[in-house]
Image (cartoon, rainbow, N blue to C red; front, side, top):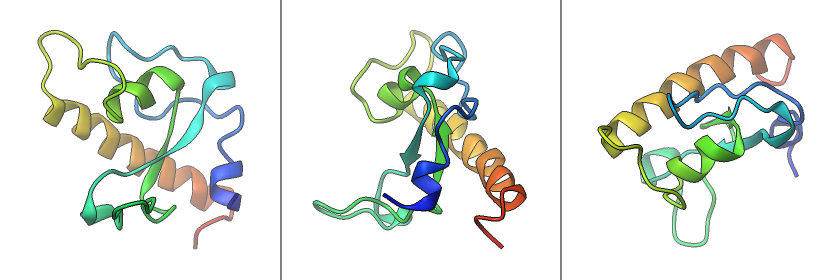
Length: 99
């Protein structure tokens, strides 16, 4: 497990999907970006830097294990993830895990 992945323990969710986020730091993990733009390939996770701190509920929706909230599109879910990625990157910089 990388230092970035390990750093998720007890962090606040940065994805924050309205009506989905459980705001429970005990469930936060490092959520890797989906798709080839994030370096993801068949049987390969995306590069760690292209991820976000996410609670179990937001992670499930982003990874499509749970349904997208009614009235929201998956593109909007991706936008919440990307905003979370930016907030998470700033946290990683403050922690000295990314320069």
